[in-house]
Length: 316
Image (cartoon, rainbow, N blue to C red; front, side):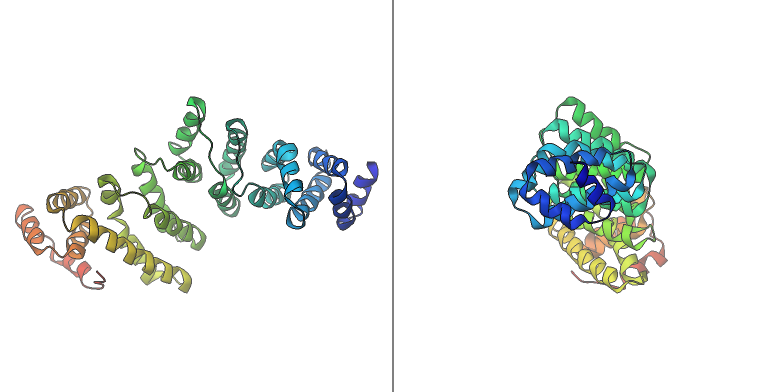
């Protein structure tokens, strides 16, 4: 089997791939090289495994998943960033719709959390893309505790990882405050990749079953999306922000138009938080001038300049 290592060292990866396709023992040896002391060997083994996944049948994929998962997950915390990048490239298609047991899922989550602590934007985005594809198994007390600790983290990326898992589970109740704050941070970051991620999260959230807390939290995003739509240089992001804003406005209209008192309470809450723009915009998009007049009377008059917020767009 040392010949396999020599072939990799000489960078004749296609020869290794051809051999491994026909011999499970060679593939097992290749998986063993993921733990080699030489980072170049680890890197080239990952490249070969990634190519095998592209070109081989389900049997090879199953063998890699069953026999190589732990080593692949371990490479996420590799000292060589090139190895980390390649490990993500292999794990992402490998885990697409794959069923992991809780033990393996927690191993993956722990490794991912360590990567998130580094804070590299591109790597963190790749981790979130990976976890979007992973089916979350039923989690016990310890597993749920790990997810919660991520959500409560001071690190935005760690919070997003925990929230990503909760979204996959469809269990976001009780965590709306953290989700809303994290999405707002992404949309106001000024980083195009992070803004796109924020839009992705928001678009996904709009597919959730509507709850009062959800709608109350989402009101603030009309102004955040409009800021992207009118101020972002990237045409693609402006277009996406405009589309999601319209979807959000329609959802708000559909929800609040028949819930006058709840709408009024949401407006009061927004005003108490100093979010006059969002409060007025909520009244605007549901088209309830009676609520607007009531708020005007109860709050002793609203700053005239805030009325200008209502003028630019009326899409509902």
